[in-house]
Image 1 (cartoon, rainbow, N blue to C red):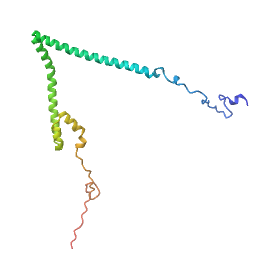
Image 2 (spheres, one colour; image 1 turned 60 degrees about the vertical axis):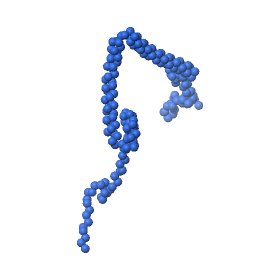
Image 3 (tube, rainbow, N blue to C red; image 1 turned 60 degrees about the horizontal axis):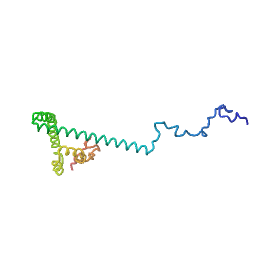
Image 4 (cartoon, rainbow, N blue to C red; image 1 turned 180 degrees about the vertical axis):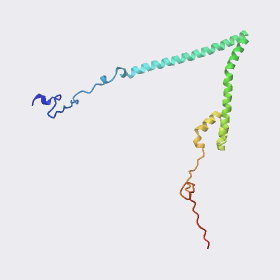
Length: 184
């Protein structure tokens, strides 16, 4: 048999080019298919880096907490020092500035509370008495939240209309059938 007959690159007698056989080729190794960014990190190294990160985050949180406490302590110490020096005017001005910041928020909170109470009163009219007594003891916002989460259980269940009527139509009568009166 000549060597050209077994050559897969040469056309055979039928004129067709045989497909190359890839079964003998080795599959690509995992190192070739993985990109350098996707290489696995050993667990020990991951744990070490993760522990270090968590320790630094905890340290940052502790430092921020200490800084906030220090700032509050300095403000309180300054207030006490001003009070001892008799600088009541400065204390009065700072307290008035704080009060001016809080007044609009207090007014808004009062408006919200009034609105929640009104919404609750309107919704309590449709609630059974045994539930109404429990909801009246709750905070208005908590009661409204409870009513929202239990709306399906509190809504009245309406039975489906199964009346087929005389003609088979649902409650509508197209042709009214009247029987003649018998005169016997």
